[in-house]
Amino acid sequence: MPPRSVNLLSYYDGDGVEQDYAKAFELYSEAAEQGDAAAEFSVAYMYDFGEGVELDDLKAVEYYTRAADRAMLRRSSTWR
Image (cartoon, rainbow, N blue to C red):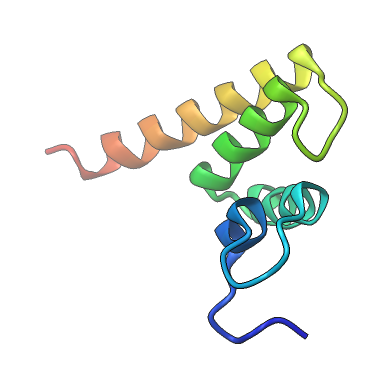
Protein backbone atom coordinates (compact mmCIF):
# COMPACT_ATOMS: atom_id res chain seq x y z
CA MET A 1 0.00 0.00 0.00
CA PRO A 2 1.50 3.39 -0.99
CA PRO A 3 1.88 6.16 1.58
CA ARG A 4 -1.11 8.49 2.06
CA SER A 5 0.66 11.40 0.36
CA VAL A 6 0.79 9.57 -2.97
CA ASN A 7 -1.13 11.34 -5.72
CA LEU A 8 -1.62 10.86 -9.45
CA LEU A 9 1.66 12.52 -10.27
CA SER A 10 3.52 10.24 -7.85
CA TYR A 11 3.12 7.22 -10.14
CA TYR A 12 4.16 9.23 -13.17
CA ASP A 13 7.25 10.69 -11.48
CA GLY A 14 8.05 7.79 -9.14
CA ASP A 15 7.81 10.13 -6.15
CA GLY A 16 7.37 7.98 -3.03
CA VAL A 17 6.37 4.94 -5.08
CA GLU A 18 7.91 2.94 -7.90
CA GLN A 19 7.42 4.79 -11.20
CA ASP A 20 4.56 3.12 -13.06
CA TYR A 21 3.32 4.81 -16.23
CA ALA A 22 0.54 2.23 -16.69
CA LYS A 23 -0.81 2.92 -13.19
CA ALA A 24 -0.48 6.68 -13.74
CA PHE A 25 -2.39 6.34 -17.03
CA GLU A 26 -5.12 4.35 -15.28
CA LEU A 27 -5.51 6.96 -12.54
CA TYR A 28 -5.36 9.94 -14.92
CA SER A 29 -7.99 8.25 -17.11
CA GLU A 30 -10.34 7.86 -14.15
CA ALA A 31 -9.90 11.53 -13.23
CA ALA A 32 -10.35 12.58 -16.88
CA GLU A 33 -13.65 10.71 -17.07
CA GLN A 34 -14.78 12.76 -14.07
CA GLY A 35 -14.08 15.97 -15.99
CA ASP A 36 -10.64 16.98 -14.71
CA ALA A 37 -9.00 19.09 -17.44
CA ALA A 38 -5.47 18.57 -16.09
CA ALA A 39 -6.02 14.81 -16.11
CA GLU A 40 -7.39 15.00 -19.66
CA PHE A 41 -4.21 16.80 -20.69
CA SER A 42 -2.08 14.15 -18.97
CA VAL A 43 -3.97 11.34 -20.73
CA ALA A 44 -3.46 13.15 -24.04
CA TYR A 45 0.26 13.53 -23.37
CA MET A 46 0.61 9.86 -22.48
CA TYR A 47 -1.19 8.81 -25.68
CA ASP A 48 0.94 11.28 -27.62
CA PHE A 49 4.22 9.84 -26.35
CA GLY A 50 3.18 6.24 -25.65
CA GLU A 51 3.85 6.41 -21.93
CA GLY A 52 1.93 3.68 -20.08
CA VAL A 53 -0.31 3.16 -23.09
CA GLU A 54 0.11 2.38 -26.76
CA LEU A 55 0.91 5.47 -28.83
CA ASP A 56 -2.32 6.78 -30.40
CA ASP A 57 -2.30 10.15 -32.17
CA LEU A 58 -6.07 10.25 -32.62
CA LYS A 59 -6.75 9.65 -28.93
CA ALA A 60 -4.10 12.22 -28.05
CA VAL A 61 -5.84 14.87 -30.16
CA GLU A 62 -9.22 13.88 -28.67
CA TYR A 63 -7.97 14.33 -25.11
CA TYR A 64 -5.98 17.51 -25.86
CA THR A 65 -9.17 18.95 -27.35
CA ARG A 66 -11.29 17.90 -24.38
CA ALA A 67 -8.80 19.46 -21.98
CA ALA A 68 -8.66 22.71 -23.96
CA ASP A 69 -12.44 22.91 -24.29
CA ARG A 70 -12.93 22.30 -20.57
CA ALA A 71 -10.30 24.91 -19.67
CA MET A 72 -11.96 27.45 -21.98
CA LEU A 73 -15.39 26.74 -20.46
CA ARG A 74 -14.01 27.19 -16.97
CA ARG A 75 -12.27 30.40 -17.94
CA SER A 76 -15.27 31.85 -19.76
CA SER A 77 -17.55 31.15 -16.82
CA THR A 78 -15.34 33.30 -14.57
CA TRP A 79 -14.90 36.11 -17.10
CA ARG A 80 -17.23 39.04 -16.48
